[in-house]
Figure 1: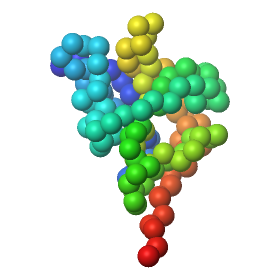
Figure 2: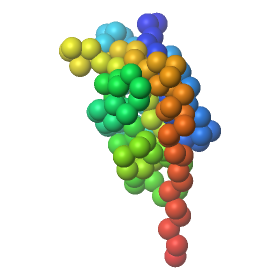
Figure 3: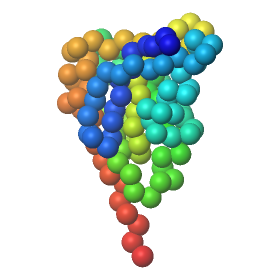
Figure 4: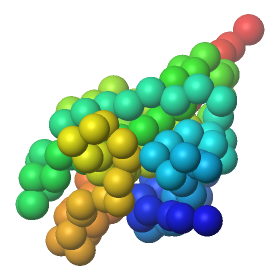
Amino acid sequence: MKTIKGILIDAATASIREVDVELDGDSSSTLKSMYKLLNCSCVDVGRGGLRYLPSCPDDDVWFDDEGAFREYDPGFMLPEWVPLIGNGLILGYDANGNCTSHNLTEEDLKLLRETVQFVRKAKKEG
């Protein structure tokens, strides 16, 4: 199976690490692998939110589109973003919009680890 490299923001373990993202059978989609890594069944994408990093990557941040509806799950927040509940997955993309390996440098990863805030959605009272 073909894979690309992604960066997983793992909210449950409060860690950030490089992961292999499997390409689906048509070798252009990563949806099944995203569902597994993000532990969800519906994804959304944030664009341009990593330009604060030293190499100014134009990579996407994928996340659980329904995370905000969960009552009490860990999440994360990037600088100037609202908190996202669940995990995040950073991937690049090509001219056709297909996912590709991330473009973050070691320096980017260092600053990403310093600036991501891990959060937990508060339990509702009553």
